Each structure stands twice: as structure tokens, then as C-alpha cells.
Length: 97
Image 1 (cartoon, rainbow, N blue to C red):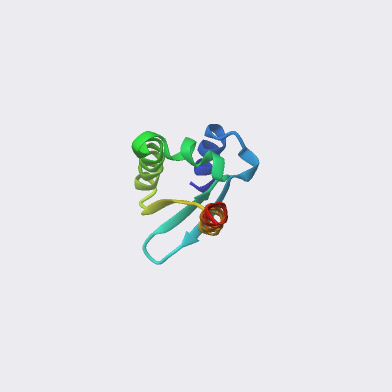
Image 2: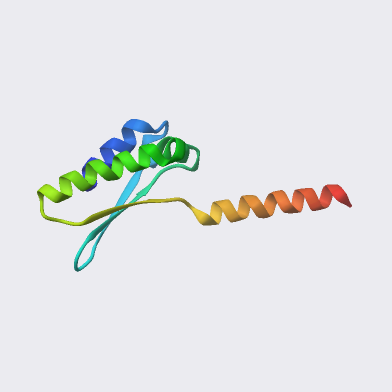
């Protein structure tokens, strides 16, 4: 299933080299963490989350056939987001003084 998520994601994004899927196997379920380049997040999530929901639906259908419980999480780099926000704040603050 990890390979399927990776294949779908790489087919959708502009930067397929940045796509990574991390598989975390728990007692009752498998978590697949999908990471893509920041600029490709919109392509993976889609309008109102439709693409993300479709990816989860396909993976869930495969998981049911294999009697497994799989969760697909789309992960984005919070540190980049915080640093960018901080940079904008400092830039605005400096322009006011």
C-alpha cells in the first residue's frame, strides 16, 4: 500500500522526487505518512480536500481486501510554515519603523 500511495502522489505533483511515504505499523493499524514539497500540497489536497479524500478512499478499499486498517496522513513541514510566518512578521514590523 505504501507503494500505491507513492505512485498516486508522484503522478499528481510537479516535483515527484520530493514525495516520500513513511509507513508506521501499529498494533491495530498502519499509518502512511505522505510528505510532498510545500508547493505541491495543493495538488495533493485538492479543492475542499477532494483529492486527499479520493486517495484515502482508494487505499481504504485496498486495505479492506487485505483485512487491514490503514490511515493516510498528509504531513507538511510545520517548521517551514512557522519560519515563513516569522519572516513576514519581522519584515512588516521593520517596514513600520
